[in-house]
Length: 210
Image (tube, rainbow, N blue to C red; front, side):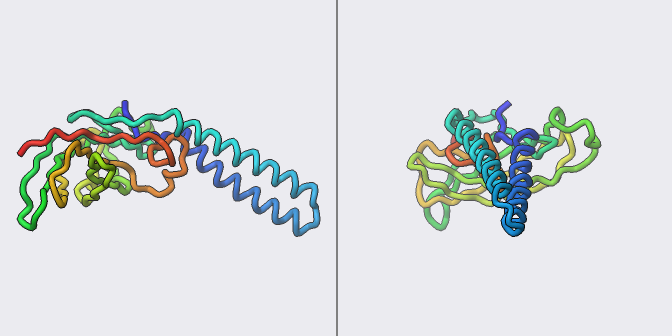
């Protein structure tokens, strides 16, 4: 299964780092105000070791990752903590844009993978997806964002649908790929997430028809 890298463990580590860091900052300030320099030094050391460990794990996860390009029909799972939404490209076509340039229409299938839901989640409970970023990526590394509105539909486990995403580009491009990922800002700081700095990305190849 190809995922965006978010999982309960990495999320817990991220939340623990935030809460632990906040607690250490408060403890350091209290120690300094109380004039307890030795305690403040200990707190500062613990905080430094914790931050260094997190950054080391973050760097290892990014360095050892790799880019993936999924073939048409292959799924990428985006984690919603206790369940996954699976995305795949099932069609793509180009046509001339009346305003000039080229219009790309990409058909994306969205599926709520019922095999990934938590045992505590009701089978008929709907899911409203978190924010998404979607764009076309050309061979020169340029991004052309599209509207994620068609990806906001609520789903129940096992449900699926397709939606067309339209991109208007200034000209026809070669080796175009689709980028579809979480747009949640905090994922940039989660160990092993594809949005994190230096981490490999998963994109979709497009087999264009005219």
